[in-house]
Length: 355
Image (cartoon, rainbow, N blue to C red):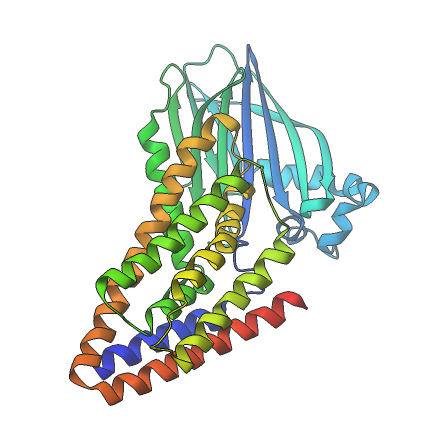
């Protein structure tokens, strides 16, 4: 039992060690393909950090200067098009650069291309691996026929080729599957969310109490996830991220001090869950999903988040309950150590994000 708890704590420590200042940022790019009549256009948005990696003696912020970008746009286009291949019915299409535009508010660059020889089309094949130096990089593809979004795909790792017939509209299940996976994945690459949930579980309690606590967290973050995704209310990340870290400090301190007479974890879960929902929403916002895909993607992403949370609860709560029943003194030491760890990690992230 002690070995199991020890392994769990070491795993959490490893997560904290690799966590960066912004918990929700990942290396991503976004590719929109628009087929209108006989014309195929491409809009590619990529980060200045990724693009500057391809250029000697160019810092990422320099590419936000239109004059600097203009000097390097042809070279960037050549590099990227060598890693982005589009075929129509098996025949390769030739692309040419139309424009390169800085996107300062996101520290990105947008490159617009036009493809020749796009019609008639029966099947499209897209091969994409834009930044092979970073195996974590993911490229999100939206394919439009006219104004209608007909396909969504993700290029990651070895998954660099997508083929689909144009007459066949993508069903709802592939979207649900993809964004459910995104929700689960987001939980497990975000140690801040993991530690918050664990902090809520450390003092234990009856099954009913724990279910109420987790349900409060679920309801709260679902509310703000919807508000932010539909752009009704969307606080800036430089406010949301420090408050998420502060929520971890609060639940950690409470778990360390303990309070059997009054248990505020239900209110912690709901209040801070509202803030965590904005953090979850940042992932969907970064994907720049079109309006017609938001509802399904939001539902599936939220399901994925819940699956991730349930996995954490099933892994942690039974271990702590078993330890309390068999060795109460050891359980108290483990709880104090884990609470101290949660508090320290949250404080570290808070000061890192504020600074």
